[in-house]
Image 1 (cartoon, rainbow over the protein chains, first blue to last red):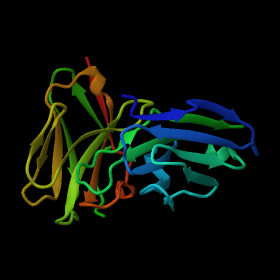
Image 2: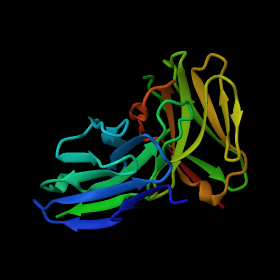
Image 3: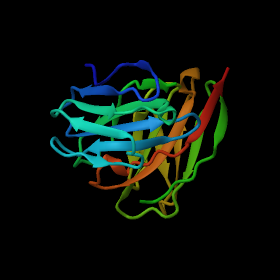
Length: 114
Length: 112
């Protein structure tokens, strides 16, 4: 049971380059999320998709775009990377509508922008 | 959503109980208390949640005070693998997970 899978795990970009972080979950969850985590800080929500076909901005959406490709997949795109986007990115999924409160996270994607 | 307050760091000896406190004095009647932890470099992991009764699972116990203004996560026999950042979060019933606000948590260090 893979859970939440993120690719790539590591990436180095130059300023201005673009890239897409991929996320897939196999738990049939309706909601998916992208977070970033900077050193010594908590997780900050970038974008989320409450259900297939919908996306919404989180706390720090500037510089990012997302696509909910289908129920399983939710991608995060950096169109023109900046050094301030150097961070660890986590994808998560959960089943909205219940009270279980269990959000499942991927292992993270470590991005460095030079 | 209610805010939470946790100590920045705590230490615990291996094999002893780790008691991690959380203050959520502004919690509303429909808000649950959730605990997650994040082991170094990994994604956060759900531990336990509760509304007003004490809860126990294979990982931990959650003790919520009668007035629900504070709670304690208990790891009964801490191991070195329990060294992690522990997040206490409150979330209203049936709201989306975007309402889960991960602060800076408590950094628990379990030592031999």
